[in-house]
Length: 329
Ligand SMILES: Nc1ncnc2c1ncn2[C@@H]1O[C@H](COP(=O)(O)OP(=O)(O)OP(=O)(O)O)[C@@H](O)[C@H]1O
Ligand SMILES: [Mg+2]
Image (tube, rainbow, N blue to C red):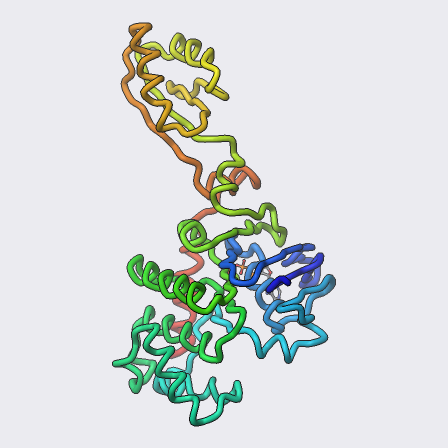
């Protein structure tokens, strides 16, 4: 049984195809990441899986329930943390949680107990009766996560769980999410355009671009699919050294570019001593050595020919946050 399964799931907005024939299978208890730049279609995909939007074509199942025909029963089994802020600022943390618990039909006598449990998990116990408008961004996010898990969903959707937060708070939130998955075997689907977040948190990652899933695997396999590490060398005699190194059988590819030698090898750190030895035997002095392990950004570049532009992402992100701040005034 899959926690999530989609068959050619597609969503069109007029001429724009925001989600384009995606086929996903997510196992129970997995932390599964949707990684992609702004506008890739991550939120739209999540909106369909959480029954907030209807697909234009294709099918989607959450815990084997069809998101269109059995929307009510899908809703009962999922928790959502939206990309945009969605708490009531004029209420206290307790009131926000209590309202949500009531909506999910948790009986009054159980609610208090359950709220105390989740508030403990996100370490906001001492702020439980404070108004949300007095909370920092990180505290609000933690409260939203607490609300998302209040009714013990089998599948938890987190849309950009750490957007706009400082590095320390982000790491903290990663820890909560991982512990949730361990303790309760909750299936977690998260979207992000932060590569370090996908790398750190997710068992498997689907890379999304222009509505399409272009690769799905563990971060390690995705990186290994690029063929290995790159060692970058500078020496006093690049031409000769490159020629000699290209004869070594473990060197998969060599290239001379911008006064540097680029070598593609497996497990680069083990090869550096051998490279030094080869150069020494030929009395060529090496001036610098740099080992580059493939990153998810390299994976994205490999499959799309472009880089995920963190600058663009955070630029848009801060615009969105500013807009929201204005909106609230
Ligand atoms: N209601 C809508 N009407 C028209 N177009 C839409 C609508 N919602 C989303 N889109 C478009 O669909 C595409 C995918 O948007 P979506 O919000 O799913 O991207 P995303 O991957 O979540 O991006 P981000 O990282 O910025 O959150 C974008 O081109 C967006 O402009
Ligand atoms: Mg989004």
